[in-house]
Image 1 (cartoon, rainbow, N blue to C red):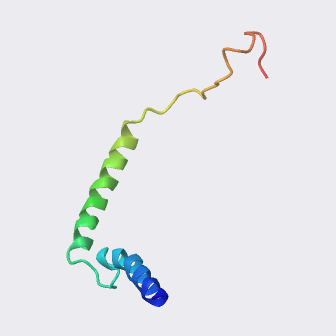
Image 2: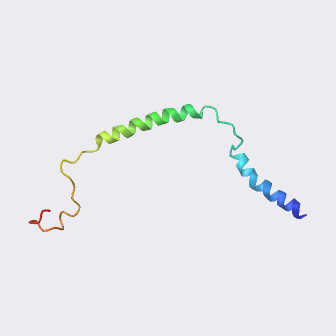
Image 3: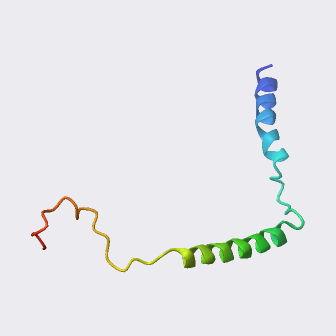
Length: 72
């Protein structure tokens, strides 16, 4: 009886892995969709980087805490 319970537990734990496609096969057409999405994402990323303004001076986060006469 104990062996039957152990086998049932192992099968119950293994069935979700099989239902998620862990059989070794690849999905058809999935590679083509991700390739076009990657190209679109890359283009959007580069466009967003071009819109980011470049600072003309280096930002000093502690600048307003120092006295105005001290420059190191």
